[in-house]
Image (tube, rainbow, N blue to C red):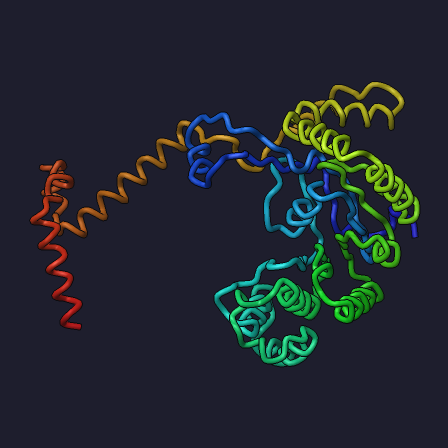
Length: 370
């Protein structure tokens, strides 16, 4: 069947993901409010692809190339910085720890995740034993997930996801930590999904599994698409790259990685725009018309989240913080609005040691009477 006749399940265009290399989480919060100079790192640098109904696409690449980041964006777990991802169907991400709550049991996690994808309690009850049996967790199903090994978490996540009947299944290294028997059973389940016409993304370092399962392969290399096409063609090229890379000395490998990391740090949206224009010109065979160039510029520079808060946003946030403090003080100090308006400084001065002691004594008395 020609691509024009096939239903597109996932379409990604100009997709990027930028992270700020802030030392602490609090620094990241400050960067939203104030101008900062934290280094930027682009984990994904303008990825385009289409996946069709019934396709199994393997995603390969070296560690740190952006595979998992891309799959999390396809699954809707993290938003792209720029670009668009069109999803036509329900997605389910299978990855170690993905969506699992550590402080509740495996059984409770099954119910929670199933409810989140729209299953009813009756449907969950009907499938509960089947899911537990597939997970092979036995009596551990009623233990808290935080006590599970990586392999046990992977088994539970896989068992839940494949029994919620998603349109688009994303398997991100979830089979790499399980035992061989469970891996083979999981691969057979994926093959069942293939027969049902599901769209599957398969992230794996097992090149044998990739060749066995994939219709096409997306090779992601330090945040960009290196190749995307028929499995044998891409995997032959990838195998050659891996062999050549391993043939480098440790010093040469370090330099290779550092050079690409520098490209990821120095990347910007103007670079993406220029590269996109160049590729489009190669397709057309002549210069890109101004109208089309303007559309490409808009699409490559459109951010989903503002890089910094505007002045108006900061003013509104400041007002909300002040109102929250005022209301909190009013309740705790039992002050009337008239008193606050006439003596606003009392919101601060009334927090004297005697007042605090009185407040604590008052509430201690209430607790004792309960």
